[in-house]
Length: 619
Image (cartoon, rainbow, N blue to C red; front, side, top):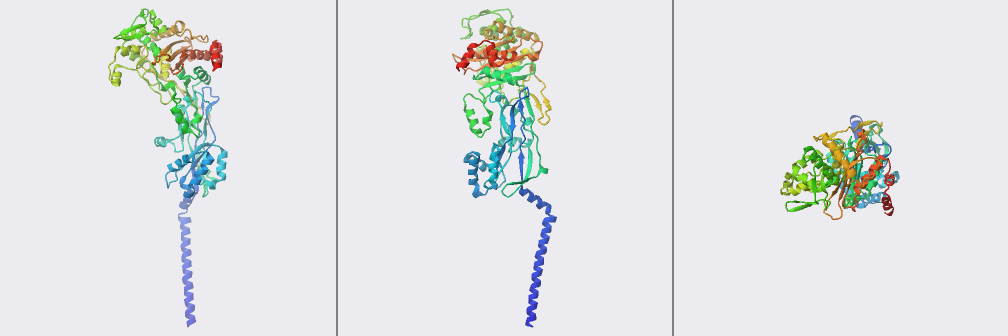
């Protein structure tokens, strides 16, 4: 009996154990069925997501060329960038990883730490540490990937600026997108890893140059090593388009050398279309340094430079136009028929207005002068008289506006400034003071409150050449597809301003400007035989006894049956330079070089300026 009882008890336990095992096994089978069949796709996707790594593939940025479309001024080369994801770095290894990265990438520990700290804790927030890296650096990190948890890399083209001179004010530079910029542009396809144009053409045509970023998905192991690319999910992106500029590299170099190391600017404009053939501003900067590893330091140093190398003086600096404004005054006198052209005004060297004397630049006076003679000799007394007694401030302001002063030219470069065309209302609002006769006479010779930019001056002369029309100045000639090299967009000239001034007035004004060259202040210095030109000199007072701002505006050929061969040249040399009347001398070299197809040295030699060559040798 006892044996049977014991046997039954054992058998019962075996049954219970077997049932328990069966139940566990059954539940395991059910769970596996649920995981693999019912919810299989969900967990498969989740596992894939946990093991996959999606990276943004930056698009190759479009190249920039001058009008000849031969050698690129700017291009991209293949390079790499390093990202860090702090959430993937074990806390106990974070300091070691930062130190090792600092040594490998030649960056300060403080710099990398700031990037790590800027990432949100608990999120897979990645930030770029450094770009422009070579394959050798990436290989070194890949070989020791176990020591670099949370580190990844990707191809990120590096921008190379082929020219280091004045053309970089036109081209500009790129930089990483800032948090503020990303907040504004994120809905336009920009990501936290994007680069964008910060200045110049790079900024104005960023959307055309940048292309479309791609996305690449790859399977990685637990420490981030790539196992395989998931090609079917790849979005390769699209390279940016190329920009062809209106700039002629030969003329740009000619102007750059003609200006030399003098603070100022030079513009060469084709009045028949608004094309800018050259635009020089000195001093300039090297964008390759700005996008280097010491970008912050370089930008800070440039901004602290008292000579403002970031400033494109052709569009971002305004000056008193000085005697060049007498072109506007002459147009007003002719159009209003305010004073007979042949009637003369006596210049005794000074004139009393109220209780104050206003002087002519020739202290002894010019004697009796008619309109054309007064323009040719740049007689201040004549224009004082015209402004105060025959035109008045309202008429002068009106004609200044007719020539485009007081308005931006809408050139396709960022941050153009507008200058000032003063009126009695403007002075009262600005200075809480009434307009007086002295303000009118100062404005009559381009001094006082009146300020203009060199690009506005170029437009003024273009209106004279075109007899009443200004075409919008521009630097983009064509946009070319980088994929098939077909023209996507060709710039069509746009009328910026059409004046109500009569054609007859402009014809007379052209003759007067030619007379300045043949019989006036410009005659001693305009010695080129390559082309006949017409123009006007200007010397702007800045409160110094030994130096002035120097202007020269001219166009050539003076007469032609082909308007497309005419160019306007504007030279502006600031008073910060040693006084040498260089604006007109530089223009003489530029006209010689353009129309004789010569470089700077050849032009100087052709002009027989041996003194200039000796000065160059001494320097």
